[in-house]
Amino acid sequence: MKGIIRGAALLSAASLATAAHAGDGGVKDYTAASASTWSGYYIGGFAGGAWGESSSSTSVGAVVPGSSYFQSDANVAAVERSGTGSLDDTAFTGGVLVGRNIQSGRWVYGAELDFGSFNLNAGGESGGVYPDFPGFPNTPYSVGTSVETDWLMTARARIGWLASDTLLIYATGGLALTDVEVTNSFSDGAPSQGVGGAGQSDTKAGWAVGGGVELALTGNWTIRGEYLHVDFGSVTSKSSVGCTPGAPFDCSTVPVAPSSFNTRADLSADIARAALTARF
Image 1: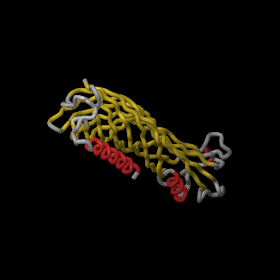
Image 2: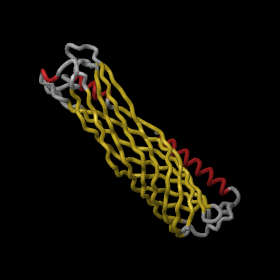
Image 3: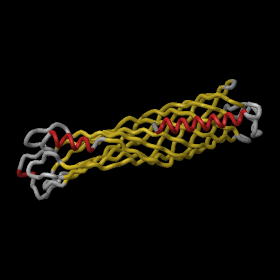
Image 4: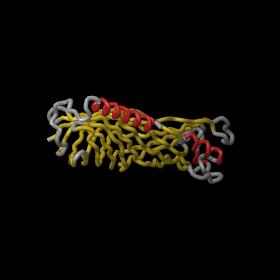
């Protein structure tokens, strides 16, 4: 829903820009730029904001009676609920881009490559009380999850229509790459002092889709406003929960085996940014 709202806002801005441009004769050139052709290579920079969203789910496996750390199905269900939910974060994004346009009549198509910062860090912690922990009622526990990334690269096709010689309205889509790290953690207040957690970092290939408006300025310069939605799928962090060595309750005296503790989290983001480019 957030992505739809941001995309609608950008399209509304594009419509206003088009209307304003057309208000004094439709294709009149306000900039004195020679925009008889958009063909050629270009290079530039961009800056804007990113709104990241992640859904996480945690699994601690089945209970083995008499040996699993979590001891009962009720405890397993409670911990899994605490480790499941939504995370979000916002961040600045900025970087460089390079591309090529080919104009055919009023249509412009081409390809673009960009690379920049993408410093999203969505995290949260949830917990509760074990519903079934024999001998130790009201024992608390805590589950933490975080999803991080710090760079973004996209390689996209672009296709657009010239509303006038200097105003391009375009759609874009293609490949998106980033490094996604998912981290989980666990602790409790039992005499055994249960602890666990790990991190997993993967370079993920996903997709990007969006659109924007671009205005040719005097000389070879252009300025644009652009919206992108990117999606990278999921990463799973695998670990286990067991007793803390040296805890008040010594697990070595009873057959308590670590329980699995795996967290799966995905990542998508909406990006709104402005760019300045120079054709050559």
